[in-house]
Image: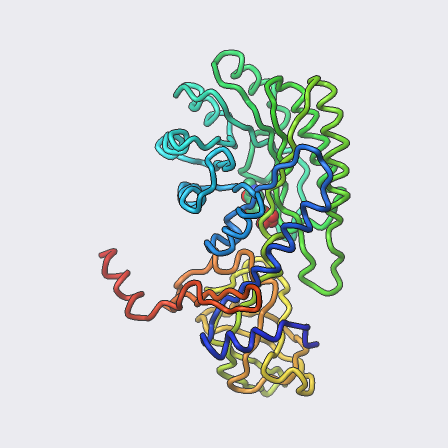
Length: 403
Ligand SMILES: Cc1ncc(COP(=O)(O)O)c(C=O)c1O
């Protein structure tokens, strides 16, 4: 199968070479609209989980659309601030942060969403008077165990049954818990999973009298595989509205609904362009198509066994052939696709690996000492280089600096 891909990808590969991440910024904007349109809560604040793709051009599109930022590290907070995001629109969902990191975020006016009681306690002791709490609702869902972030085997969040301890801490200190948060996993395609988890944390939130907002997380899934059904985001929104309405009645005042997706906004807008550098057929009949990129640039297939669509943009009409698409990293797990039907790839063909806009470049490394890919944007029918591919001498110079 050759997945339909935009025609401008060929121009990007011809101008900027490969490996290159290409981002359709118009599509990012459309997704941002789509999500907002699907949700009807009267007090809605959408945040972008910047970890999915911190490329400044991508982030700027979402900030211009009124999104705030969900950050998980000092680096992400610093990037959001440097791109002009007001601190009140940043939520720092911490996970084993240091006291120094907490002090810096507080000094910058950024609210910390605590994932443990001891962090909440230390915030209170340091005089912080507003924080949020991430609950583990014990209900999770995700594409892979490694991206499941709720339930018994996760390091994330305060167990929902410990809400009394949170309240106790509030009563003993000047700290007010103004936000209640969950994030149950990544690439969730079931609205029912969101509803079940929301039910749990919103029940817990009855015990938090100073609440101003409820954040039901990111994790909104996208269909990577043609057989997957898209998530019904409107159903997630309706469930949130209904459950928050109950909580509003309990507290006797309006609350804000927050969501913080990453993948949903940017995954489908990104492609990893790569050139075929080798085609070999083994005696067992298996054909390996080797590329000039690998799991160092797109780790999802190796780490999570994820499916990504792949298209041959050089010869889309070639006869179909069943091949394994593999990378140039010196590891057996460096496989993008097994037994994938593609228009027969030839040496020098450019392949476009789709749905690579989230957790592609942001998880990329220089493993095997291969420089990071270039990043290029397509917007309003224009192509522009965002970040050039680093050269080997720059990479080596960085290694020297570390010595
Ligand atoms: C706290 C938190 N919020 C939001 C997200 C974004 O997830 P996704 O990109 O699946 O929407 C993540 C991802 O790990 C996360 O940990």
